[in-house]
Image (cartoon, rainbow, N blue to C red; front, top):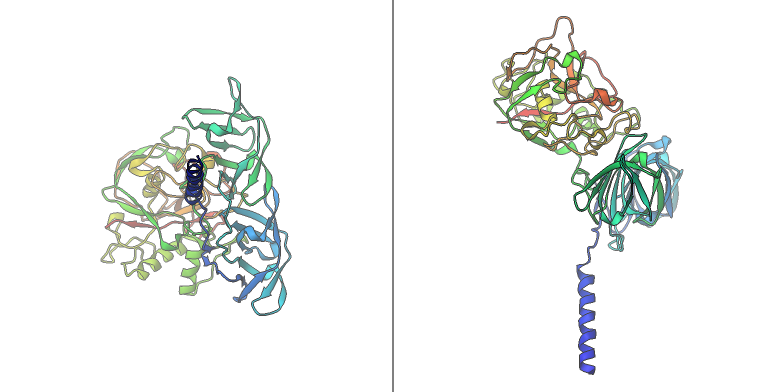
Length: 509
């Protein structure tokens, strides 16, 4: 009997130890804001270029976001970006990769130098705080639910609710959170909520509560008005592929990530029938070649490197921040100069001459983009074809979705400023921000549509009446009706706007 009891106890102990071994452990973040976290010291990166190592003595940091106020203990923080300086705007990344942006309340950083004295350093002198790694820092964190907000923030935690009711057009439905796969919120008033159930059912209606309460993995309880929420995913540990990691800097366009767009044929223009006359007539465009499109809009980080290499004046970011935000306040001439510089860096024939005309591999002027080898801006047709999803297009009105909040930063969710590239969902090809964030310069001069089919052509001669260059995509300040993939716009090539940038393109060999 004792032997049997011993065996039972042993089996139970073995089972418990096996469960402990196989339990998912959240990995330790090794890099934050593209900086390696040390194992033995915190780091302060100062605006004058100094780097200090030691220990941050502040027990916590407070941040006022657009949706809540929170105080986060330092032990839960991996890094703080304080680029806003005197404006105290900042970004906190936690050890479990939560992102909170807003106004930091801390005026001073109390920092003890390694083998040195304690210093009180004004926050407006600090660029970033990088906290040291602790191998046990994520113990107990399971990321039960993942919530993405419309301002680009995201966090893991659990909705605290016993009764959540959805008012549909046919009934009021009591939701069982345990049976939900995701919630999607669209709009800023009378918000339409789409509920996707685990069994595949879909319900649409209005939640009978203004806000939701979340218990975060970092020990806080916050309330968030539903108008700030983009999506909530209920699968434990799930983070959608469309969410780039701020920690690992996956959204960085510094590696010039591109997506292959295979050639094909499509109908260009107002295929929905409710656009303006500039989008008509609808006509057929054929590509006898394939091309590479920049996965992201060119960022300040990339463009600043170009300015430093060529000793150009860097464009103004209006205090919104640089790094992974799309570059703004650049003219068309600036954009094509950047493309030529990229070509020279990779020893490719440049794509433009001094008048902005396209060049083939021999340096001769051409109107056929398939003959251009170097980096360039996309033609208007290339841009629209890629924005629609190319040969795998699902026919969406916006680039990647019929629900604007899923794929675009625009007037209702952008905070009326640019946001980091790649923080909304991509389109069918894996291209980010083709709708919203910033408008994008194209290679071509303005022209009027005609019914005739076009093949492999670019308009390289200025229009006599409207000597403008085309741009596409809409920006952070645009309203919904001006953001379809067929919407056109243009301006003088000397223009530079706070909502206009560009992305790169290359003809595939």
